[in-house]
Length: 319
Ligand SMILES: Nc1ncnc2c1ncn2[C@@H]1O[C@H](COP(=O)(O)OP(=O)(O)OP(=O)(O)O)[C@@H](O)[C@H]1O
Ligand SMILES: [Mg+2]
View (cartoon, rainbow, N blue to C red):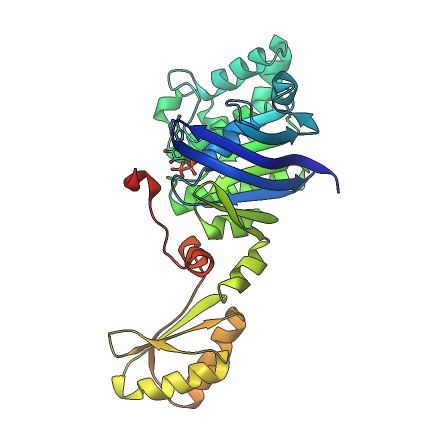
């Protein structure tokens, strides 16, 4: 297998604090790897090691076959990084930012200008190109950030929480942009706190917690491990709750639980929308009136509960 990123036994300490406790994973060329973990898990630290912004205390890592410790300049030449905090300059216009990055990447004036215009177009920022970035929305800033990382056509892209803080619409727009990059064959490592985002974008997911890899796999296998999505049915008449529970159990074949409201029945299902359709059909046939019928996809917290037996804890708060 041809790997764009290889990480083996990487340890990083900050004084007594162990940010990475020995992580191993690799990323196939042309694939998208989602590094999924809660606040303080070590996501940014891993990105910093791989992008040569910090040096690991132990272990080895390479990007595009180049060792990050032996040849950091070589690595920097083939990567793009969109850091967790936006790095674009608010006092420049969007276009000026991209041209400046082009110039820093040794593109001539004409090439830097052309590249900036191409990227502004690709990221739907042409209309805002002449405005100072401090007037941009969060979503526009993140798109410009991403555009800036692409100026030099990197082989491998690192995106640290590309959609954190964005509203659902801006998040969807950014996902669409990332789809295009993936279709063009880029290798991408992105970090996220959201299972649905990793599910939407990544071929392979690495779950990290307290600086350790606690699970690996594609989204489907991770979701299967947590028992799939949850079906929720709220009946109109509390007297019909048991009838609804029987219907749910018949459709899912799994154990049902009840909410305190006396009207809601829940059960895990691996069948997704098919289970919803089958259940709706059956409830109608049984004449059970329903207030709500919902399918809730598992979250990172569900994954944690299954893998570690505990809910996500905020390490920053512990510290
Ligand atoms: N420069 C530093 N000095 C001291 N401790 C640090 C430093 N950078 C990170 N840490 C600690 O290392 C751990 C991992 O931090 P890291 O920033 O990699 O987490 P993260 O997964 O990116 O979290 P977030 O989702 O909040 O961005 C945390 O406990 C953090 O406090
Ligand atoms: Mg981080």
